Length: 279
Image 1 (cartoon, rainbow, N blue to C red):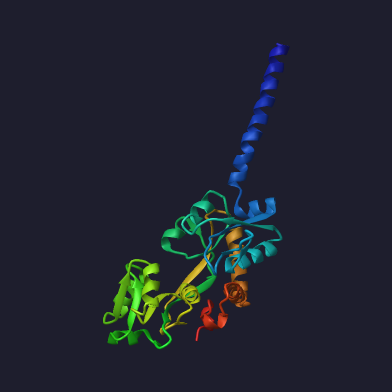
Image 2: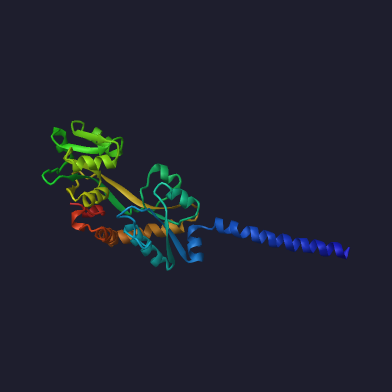
């Protein structure tokens, strides 16, 4: 009987140890983002190679708007920052797989909101703009309805739909992709091309042609920071308050301007990303 009890106790101790080993990863997986960041002392932020949002330097380090935001987040949390390369298409999967803790400059859409969470306060604003040739002008979207201005868009995009609905008389030339759109602008087959303004700024810098304008009335879209969807709201609530602070202090605009300078673009040549600063 004593031997049987001893063996039973041995088995019990072994089982308890096994449960501890198996349970530890499970507990780590169940920890919220806030708990994970605080316990590990590390914030993992996704980065997609896409200037001016993320600029990957030749030495492997990161610059750009999203990097400046990530650095401010890590500093405020008093943790180490780890930039994790991903793509826009894989960002949500990377969040769900716990490979990253946040993905800056991801636009909130109803589809994405079903898979990840976003802070309530917008991080920045895009405006639908036009890259004009130097001899062209466009102050108001309604000016397109006379049909004299040839405007290029990527076929089937929300921008194409906007012009169809609001400017049915416009002379719209549609192209299958951005590469063809830029080629049409460079060859002057169009007087201007329409995209959201950060993309247009990059095109102007790449082609060394044209001026970016924001026709009125402004048509705005917002971008934000995606985080994991979870019941513990501490991280997303903290991020919401922090974004409101950085926006009000115009830090977000400063980071954007710094990212433009990193690419050799004068911030004066780009519309701002804070809506209140639009003229």
